[in-house]
Length: 394
Ligand SMILES: NC(=O)C1=CN([C@@H]2O[C@H](COP(=O)(O)OP(=O)(O)OC[C@H]3O[C@@H](n4cnc5c(N)ncnc54)[C@H](O)[C@@H]3O)[C@@H](O)[C@H]2O)C=CC1
Ligand SMILES: O=P(O)(O)OC[C@H]1O[C@](O)(CO)[C@@H](O)[C@@H]1O
Image (cartoon, rainbow, N blue to C red; front, side):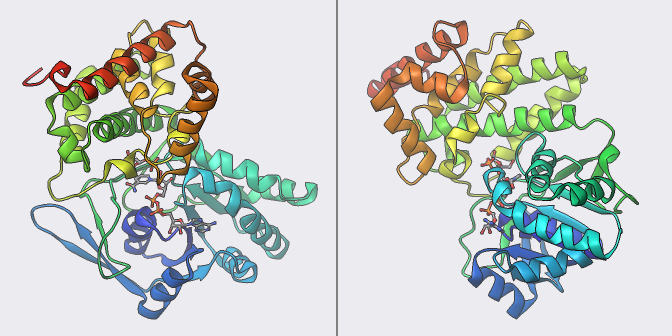
């Protein structure tokens, strides 16, 4: 069994590639960083280090890689693959679509073996999005054939994998926890048997639970952490104020998820506690700038902050702490992040109200907008006058 995985980065090597390898797949990575491709091909193996008290190491072996810019190589692998997965970042799906479409077109014309293509990205409906991009590169006849044999099951993936600083370029440190939930109804052909995948019939509650708890909490802590000068997430969460706002933000999303998807309230609360523990893992050093990366994407109307805040209001839940997180995202002036730079430039040129409206679709004069503006002022004041920042156990 062959798996073709796009993106040999942290999640690619540390989570999806490792699970596929353990499930007996021959894994071929696709990446555009030639040094990474060469290193994988020279060694054919790497270590996944589990960041916990036991420091367990897992060896992933028998892997190889190709460069995504080499269309012939991608096409050859696409023809032979039994499964295709991606972990390249939501914004990169559009870029990998033409190469996948070319390979798929060639495959369809050679044989009719079903193929599942699963995007493992932090976005709702990632595989569906990838399908749209891929289909836009196919002619009508191929599109019809692809509709029969290519499945695009959406997925939710959860494992914290920070930036890696090892001398060994392939070694990857990951948290012990992982969860990979896949929409069973969109699978074509036989269900891929991969230990670690949970198949569900309705993915929406799971992806929202993950994105609106893990990622909402993480983003809130990261933007507040950055604002108050912390480097890593565990440092930020040792600040009582940040811990309080983060915890309350995911209690707000928790109430939304319970009301919307009928999750059991006690289990949701346990889930929240488990996540707060995971964020504070002392064996992981995770920088707030990684977790806050790409703030334009994270401030999107359906993403982890604005998505639940808007929906919470519709369910009669006041998203006060979510608005603090949104406000903090507009203060993320990290000059190494192109999206942060763009937001800050826009605030200077068009003003805050217009910038908030542009990226979040939240209208000025709405109650959410008022909340965000108030929180923004409060955060600025707390920074210029630290004594105004609540401290001690809140
Ligand atoms: N790191 C984490 O803790 C988690 C990340 N995710 C999601 O997984 C995805 C990947 O994230 P990371 O692994 O952290 O990022 P990463 O930056 O470590 O890995 C992305 C990889 O994709 C490669 N890439 C970029 N453009 C490409 C192209 N055109 N063709 C092929 N490869 C290309 C990059 O060279 C890089 O190796 C993102 O959607 C992220 O939101 C989801 C859960 C956890
Ligand atoms: O990968 P993204 O969407 O940029 O966001 C970073 C977030 O994703 C994760 O990497 C995994 O869910 C978290 O560690 C963090 O909340």
